[in-house]
Image (cartoon, one colour):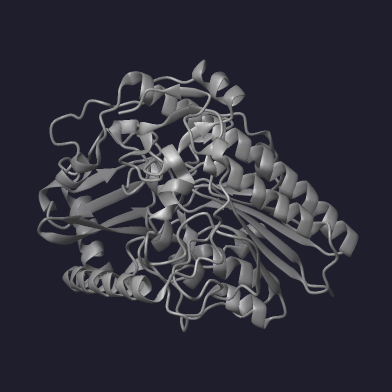
Length: 484
């Protein structure tokens, strides 16, 4: 019997609240069809609300406290196995198309080939020439500066994602001997907040200014306060319009890739598994926060959907799950060895019609930094409740019921002391030595500085980074909302 072919479409920074029928309605007919055809995990979370830590945790099956990766200036050691290694060892061609945000000399980590480059840094060093390549968008790839250029037109992200999708379509149009695991990594809907003009206009007429733009006393701790960007109402509305427009454009690309993948597997006579996931979400202006790096639902929750042969249609699973589950699920699905000692768990029983573990505790971790150093932060989700704690802000722990209170305006910490104490005990058991993680992160930052100095002295290898952003995507877009 032939092994199944698998394709996972992984976007960047897509909050699942922005979809058809969601809290913020976006026209996503292809994602809607995928949900109708398969299983949607409605309470899936990122292991870390930041790109590199989330992706390295996903690949290794190890939470950030175990990889030691909490920032975007870090990478997995090349002796750390990923679930992709397990698939390749089982006979799969493991294909990376586009984005994964690998840093340093190892740009594979188990992938046997790459058919489209990455848009982000592949080196420890941020080269000066990237400013020229990105033009007015140079600073808008970071949350603090993302609202500086908002609107409708061309952007490096829109151009890059088209390149990735075309590479995938070309690959699927060719014959391939081995069973295929293909990971399609796009950059959208990650900022810059620029959508195609027609989609920007469409959602400008639909969206409202994001909620909770005036912080209530004590609602945001000092770390979150430092992340706030007080953009004008016009800019905040423009961010929402652009973000929704980018999601609709991404949905169109998902439809193209899924149709091509179905034709590909039909021609090979193989069964198939198609997945959609993102690494984390985007606050998109809610609470004057842009991007990720928080445990609020729009930052920490992710879409996770599977459809394919043998998967029940139209099923929603509401028990908490994690991006860490992706690798064990895929390995289990194809009969490959499942990574040992993983922090994730296989969801194949659910995909075959079984039930989820409703009592499971799912986590997300982050590392904040201020003048005093690094500060570990932890989110735990169990059942209906979510607990959030930051070292250095111990008297501001949060206890929420996300499904009943999606904007997390009602902190139950003061009114449910016994439940709060139970979560605090669970957090202490889950991470018994958070101080050691902070010390290790300070050491890693020193090491990263050394690697940067080494690269500057010896030269950068950027052979797998996309550098062909056209001049038309380096200037203000056709429709440009005045920024900060």
